[in-house]
Length: 281
Picture (cartoon, rainbow, N blue to C red):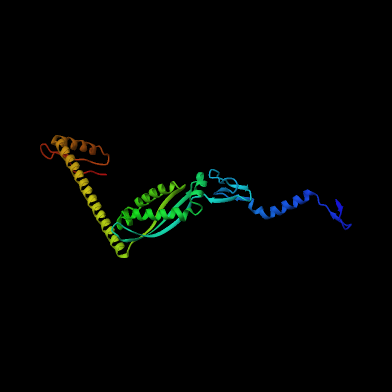
């Protein structure tokens, strides 16, 4: 453990493994924070290998606790469906300025995350998705009149912007989940004119509905009257004087059988029905 030095004293001789262990501890203290990382739920990671060929584009690191060589670098991506908002001013088909607010949902292509990192990088929202949505929205809205955007064509605009933008960013390893127009703001005078026009159109539709309803009611009454008329005509043809006389006789016979009455029947002339003059209870 000890050896004599030139001056006659002793130098402690440390075992080699103590020295190596000490060096290893110092190394871990310096680099330990760079050797471990955690990929949380809703995240994936890619690794840049400094001495191993650079970015491994085909490797997508899953969730969990992982080790990494201290000279390599890890990039962690949020792969959840995320939502963002955009407000802009665009021109309509007739050149009027329109303010539009929309929201959009997006996510990176998880299986191609390494290729996304190599082609675009972590700031893909600001560098790719947002500029593309702005450009396509301006292009699509330029095909419509303000009143169409305000009322009947909003869904159609959403579908067109979504379809064109989705195709544009797909080759950059990005997915678009939805684009929703939240609000369309027109110049105040134009908005008032459109609202007035829509109100008049609604009143016209209500008036047409009332006319149709009255027409159907009149048709129903006409059919009902025709039915009653047909019924009366058929009944009139079947009722003869002989039938009436027979029914009168039957009714008189039934009344005469009542124990609470005294019936006096007197002929009322040739061919006439009997007459009941009275009775006691």
